Amino acid sequence: MEHVEFGNSELAPACKERLALFARVEAQRCWHGNVLGVKSNLEPILRHFPKWKLKEAESLWCAAFVYYCCLGAGYVFPVRPKECVSCNLAGCGAWEEWAKADNRIGWLAPSCLPQPGHIVLFDKVFENKVHDHIGIVLGADKDRIVTAEGNLNNVSGVVERPRDRHIRGYISLPDGFVY
Image (tube, rainbow, N blue to C red; front, side, top):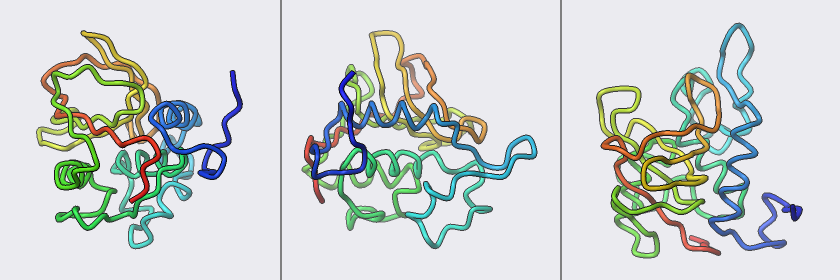
C-alpha cells in the first residue's frame, strides 16, 4: 500500500479516497471519552472547538470526529462555515445546513449509492431525533454501508450498518476543496 502523509495538504490534495483511508485509520485508533474508568483521549479531536469543554463533549463527539478526519485528510474549511446557521460543525445538523447552502458541496439523497469518502448523516440511530449521528463512508453496496465513526458508545470504530430509513443523506466534498 502506498504511504500517505496525512494532514499535509502540500503533499497530496484532499480527496474522498484519502478521507476514507484517514478515517479508517483514526476510527481504529480507539478514540474514546471517559469509558470503563479510562480517562478520555479526545483532546486532539476537540481542540478545534475551543469553547467546547471535554466534559460537555462526552458522548456527543461524532461530528467533531468527522471534522477532525476531514482536516487530517487535507480538506481546508472553518469550524463554522458562514452557511452553518444553527451551530458549528461539532453538531450533525450543521453539516447538512452547510452542504445544502454551499453549492460547492454535494448533498446526495439516501437512495444514492455512496462512495468511500462521502459523509453520511443519520436520523434516529441512538435517540429518537433527526441528525443524531454522522460518519464517513468506507464502502457500500445496495444493502449495507461500512463507516468510520466517532462516539459509538463513546468509542471510535468501524461499523457496518444497513442502508435503511436511518440514513438522512450523504455529503460529497469536492476533491481538493478549500473553503
